[in-house]
Image (cartoon, rainbow, N blue to C red; front, side, top):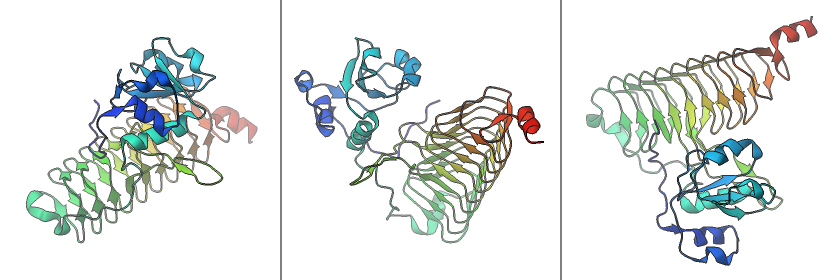
Length: 328
């Protein structure tokens, strides 16, 4: 099920020629009025959406994409089907960042909200138990029998399900929370991800227009930081439990029934399968796939994909039996 994102307002009536001006792309072929609906990843883009292909490891998604307009590099342009319109640029991700900001003008604004419902307007939340100094933004939805701790801030359009317990000093923005979820003290959920492009004169920030989605029966430990997605969403699967001080970067997807212990860090866009257990202080590099039923020992460094049912440990993480033999 694809949840609708109510957190960012998209510019309407965007034409391809206007988009190309933003990235200084000049080509008379695109001078006519071609209306572009949105910018999306290859796997979810529709025919009138703009998408991008910047690495050959996404070739399977390229073959299936419905998008008719693909931003790519000179090296990869020959792979794109002739039926698609190719927009060839030097740096795909920098161009995507500029175009995303054009579609979503407020996407780089991550400052605190100025307008809150002071005093929580309790008549709209009759079955919710509030602590002191709770601030709610506009159109926040909180389900029955939930509780919100002291000094917690919940920004506009956040949705929290039934029987949820939110601790004190928690900040939640750009997030959808399922039922029976516990978020313990000090967690920060839905902030922008750490995405930018280094430059000598000025680093270019990457807009983050995704959400955080927390499924049913999840527990988020104290002082967790969970970044929202860039174009796609950051997702915590059903029945997964996260210990204290876990960091989850943008676009990470964690499966069902996972156990993540203290001080584990996930770099962006990694996908974690179901029933995965990760020991304390392990690190998962970006854009990796960890299979189902995997066990990762504490302090491990995962720098490549891990297949289903594997048990690994060490840096770089390797089969646990091999690790033990090497470290007798």
